[in-house]
Image (cartoon, rainbow, N blue to C red; front, side):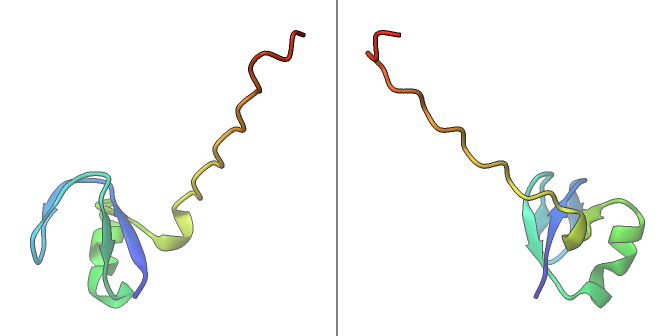
Length: 60
């Protein structure tokens, strides 16, 4: 099942809060995607990689 990002709080099988991920069949939540409540899986940006930390004490 694809994951959808919750853009606005809504009540489904339970209360979904903004920022959560929701597993659902695309055909069951198509109306929520169209209404802007959920973000479609392909429109969810990939998380940025964590920047590498510079070494301390290099003296430069």
